Each structure stands twice: as C-alpha cells, then as structure tokens.
Amino acid sequence: MILGFSCLAYNLSCSSYLSVASQFQRHHPMVIYIRLQWWAGDPLSTPLVLIGKAMAGILIAFFLITSALYWTNAYNTQKFPILMTELYDTSGNKYCISKVLNGDLLILNATTYKEYSVTRLTSFRIASHALLFAAISTGLVQVLTKHGRYY
Image (cartoon, rainbow, N blue to C red; front, side, top):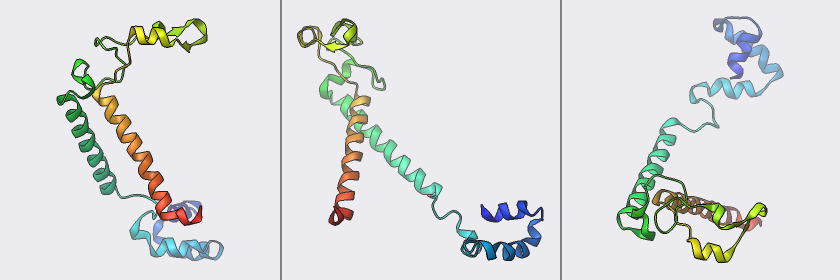
C-alpha cells in the first residue's frame, strides 16, 4: 500500500520505483520491511482460503445442528418452519407480544403470559443461540487459559 502510494505521490512510473523507495526510506524506515516482504501481501490480513474453510465449517455445523433439532422434534420444532426467526406460541401461530404486555409501559404481565402461551423458537433460532453461546464461551476460555496469569 505504501509502495503504490509512493509511486503516485512522486508522479513516477513504477519502473523508477527503486529511486523513489530509496528516497522514501530515509523518512520511513518501514518501507524496507514492506519492500522485502512485498510477495507476502498484507501481514495483518487473513488468506481467503482460511476464511472460506472457516465459513464452510460454520455452515456445515449450522446445517447439521438445525436439521438434527428439526428431525428429532426437539422442543417441538416440527410445528414451526425451519428457517424462520419469529417467535411462536405453543399452537404454532406467530406469538402476539401485545397480549402479554401491560399497556403503554411495556411491562410483562406474568399471569397473562402463563395463560396465553410460552414462547417457542424455531430450530434455526435455537441453533443460532447455541452457536452464539458456544462462541462466547470459547472466547472466554481461550482468553483465560492463554492470558489468565495476567488477570
């Protein structure tokens, strides 16, 4: 990035790059590192292959968890569509939140909540919550095991 900027800043073609880089090195010693490592790319970026493998692993795990929850009928998920994110009541209809809240204050009325229905989640929503909690706990465990001696 700095190399391309140096060619544009001095209005020179990249064939005369070496003279520009030597002038630039006097003021910015980091150019030496970038000039020697130009073939490696950005040292802070993640290669596209690793990003693709991580995404494939997440999608496969998500597909397996979602389909396993649906086909085993865990939490009565077969009453609801697989890939919806809405809340449902026990009969399979969309959950009407206004029935359990008190007026304009938006306070939960526990008696009407028990009378109306308990909220039910789809298998997609259950899997997303499970993977979210797993990711958060994995991050906390890794920080504590790798850097726990500093806390």
